[in-house]
Length: 211
Ligand SMILES: O=C(CO)[C@H](O)[C@H](O)COP(=O)(O)O
Image (cartoon, rainbow, N blue to C red; front, side, top):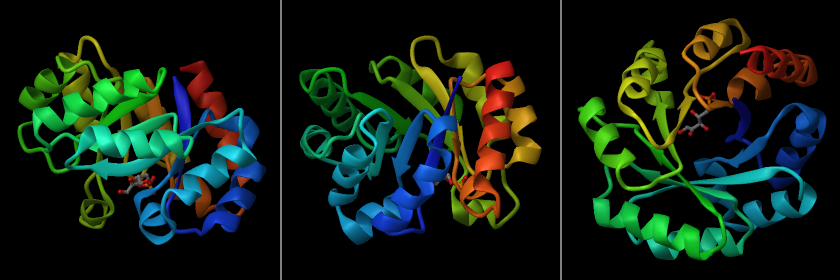
């Protein structure tokens, strides 16, 4: 099980400063969608240059032109690129093909907004993606939703891809997440909004390693 730090509401220097605090406790650093919108793929490049030993995920949430977007993110240094599960299968297949061409880049499919989770997870699992991620976005977190039940649903049907989970995960809820045995746990505010980020990230890493 791996831990991914999601950076969303920071700029590039703030992001780099934040990762410096917790880099020994995380496996992957995510350049979140708001950063990509604000700063472009330069943010991915800057993060990879600053932390060449960390994997960098570009949360592009690609919806079309899968191959092209994966090519551009790979050129910027991304190791993992996100595609939306609600995209056409052709888009997801294009992304997977390009990721392979780029020498072992990975595709994470984000299930955000999918209504028939079980059916779509089965279909996506057959497309050769690396990760299938259940995700409760900010707007549904604000309505009290969490991704824990969705993780169990997806875990039951996914046979090939790794599973990931994101959406409001905190130190206090991590044990419940770990019990469900995802391959990747994605945490944003649960670390970035804490006063002692290092202490929280360290405890999270411990729980994940024990799991
Ligand atoms: O992709 C995202 C929002 O669309 C976030 O990066 C993801 O939800 C993790 O952040 P948090 O733990 O704060 O919910």
